[in-house]
Image 1 (cartoon, rainbow, N blue to C red):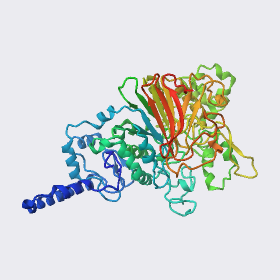
Image 2 (cartoon, one colour; image 1 turned 30 degrees about the vertical axis):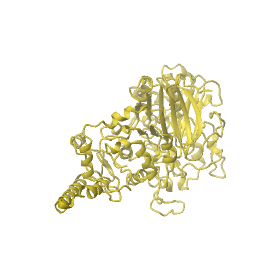
Image 3 (spheres, rainbow, N blue to C red; image 1 turned 90 degrees about the vertical axis):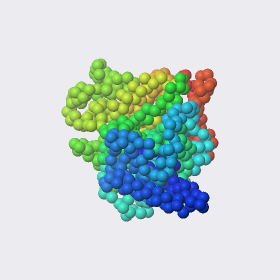
Image 4 (cartoon, one colour; image 1 turned 45 degrees about the vertical axis):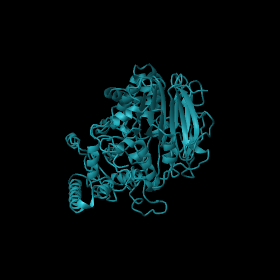
Length: 636
């Protein structure tokens, strides 16, 4: 598409120079009597327009690579400079839209002449936002994990567009920005694969972690995909009429929303230590066309956000709560990988991260998060702790006050833990990106407060919580390594999901299950798709999630793998098999090929129903679970 987002990236780099073509083809095709005179006038006007566009492009805007519009510019260092409010006000105070930027190939996406023509032809017409508000949203598509390399993505046309969705939600991994452009297994000496190993770049495929310039190219690669362009064209048809007013993809007549996961974040399994996370955040928000004035762009804050679909339509509002599970994320708790790392061979570079995990960090005692070990598995297990007035805040994830302890109180507890002395920095991170906390965080205290408030204050019948990491996964132990023959196998209970952060996980499970309305979790990441239901009562998993007394079920729909590069045929083994009966139709009821999710709401039934589906590459329905919105219970 030609200029959907002011911010940023050129959709449809293969398009023709429509404005220039029209000038040559129609503006100068005059009657023979005055042809000579008007050809001269047209030529002069065209040259003047091109010179003006060239001056503006060279003096103020980027002239190559990824197009950075109102919301950003490219600096020599590869960082993104945010336009000030004054600059934005200036650029938006004229009837003439800003000159369009140039695609990587150097081809203009839209000429200044065409922009002038459009600005003159649309004065006083209805805005994109006004049009968007007229569409009643009842079919919401979502998905994650496109492709590591540039390939066709037929699911957009054959599956998503053919399903006639009203909105789309990204659950992460729009692009694999940290992924090399070569196969490191066959090209180990390539510059993308041959780097010095450290905690950030722990294997050949992670050499580009944190490289913002490379991330720009990977985002541009996805946004230039022809199949994806057809999808955006379908979702944002109003942008053809309002190319400079559609500043945000959420304002398309069929909104596009989203949050990121680790590959958008530019570091596989990344956490809050990411050195370039502020620059990467701006880049990702540019992809979605989020305005420069948005609070999501604030320094030190993640990109979490609430967006209401059908806003103002009584009884039919849908709140979409987009979580950020990277920006404030702690390192994995120490106990989750301690055994694994103790059995690995420290001489192998692929295990160098283990040395940092157990012996690195600022104080040399390991970068792993120690709070769950010391509070959840330490102080909270002491018999005398149960009588402490702070028990709920420190040890009870089901409590509404859980996890919110002031810094001085937490420090006092930390220093007296099991009669040993612990440094404050070991126990509670109190830096610029997080408040004090007594648990290993994925969201961080500020985001948890925000989420709790949004859930409790929302009057929407349906709340979709979008989580880049699966909340409900596979909580039983598995063999995660037999790294050294002389040692026994190491066992793990999690991958890169909430199973690693059990107190935080339990807290969210109870927060969602007790919130007003019906809460459904949408997720991705694992490169297969399924539907899981956490039921109340005594179950195989109830001890793991402390879920026996939940007032209602909690449903999670995972749609992961939009292409045959990420979602490939796979057997029902390992982490794909459901070991605790969370899938309603059996342990192997999952989709391993390219797929996306669809939420279809039937507003006119009594009570309204929500059909939660997994659909295949051709739009065919593969899995389905129906809920009643009044109770959030599955329909038998």
